[in-house]
Image (cartoon, rainbow, N blue to C red; front, side, top):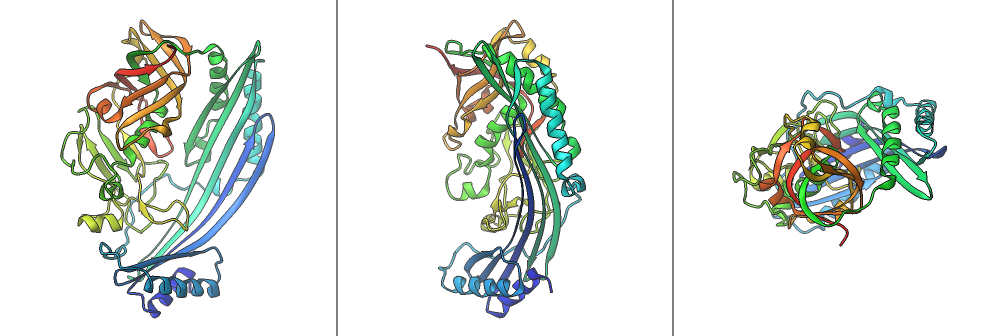
Length: 445
């Protein structure tokens, strides 16, 4: 008998009215490197979380010791905890019927079987490429993380599902130095397959950016047109819209989108989908962490809010179907709704076109400090780490250190002028480059 089945059966024997077991095994290889590899570590994490319900009394308990005795003891403990837990008036039941959708591009055998020598060769090649690009450049602190996991879910409705998935994240940082002036620049990729990482392109682009931005400086404050690169705007999209469309945020009263289904919240240029089945998507998988089939959900359609994102608990509370968006960050984490592949659909404009029509503006390549923004009020604040002045449709002076400020909800309603066709991702958030009609940019006084 597998451990998940053993746990579920024991919880039911001890008096649970519903029971669920969630088991995950994960292997993560992490490498920190600069001119040489500074740290190389592979760690395996294995654990099981049990959820028991006695009527409306619900509890969870986790253990990392996976033998029959320990899991049996965990089943005893979680039922005991549930008996002593106050009732949750909103609790109905766990997912009663599992499903699986035909997802593609979420598991790579090459990452599962990745060997140390393969990683070392690619990283050595990338750092050599960086150093050979220009004598002023050398590799700075960079990182790689590759993961492979196996997830098993079982419950008291005789439902069982299992999946394997992989992911790899690479940050390459170059440091340029000239006449005592230094500049760091980074490039990154977050993908599902080993062969998707273009180490040489990342190395060369980071080196080139480090040199270009050696002379970057802030400009005087202004209100101006701003073009924001795809990965930078994807990060803003996730920060400012990813949580407000989460049903848990709506139900807890912390979302600015409460009661706005069917109403216009953005420009007609704005369509956002959450696509759990996107081929090679960062969070693509056949089913979520409660066994609901993954799906494509229209979130914002031509500016109109169509759906929130649900897991089992929040969907039953609103008397709607789950959108298949349950996530558990780690095996011991509480299940909750979260975006899968959250995509601002691209437009038709070439990247050059976004810039060509701007006579006086700013191009934003990368920002920092976005986390200081407030998705509830919509106040967006981000410091330009790397960007350019746009003059007569061309990128000219490199800039940095200026602060972008706007109300994000107002921005997506009235300020988006043009959407690029260059969709790219920042983890699970996807966006094209976007041209904003007017942004407040604080710089030198």
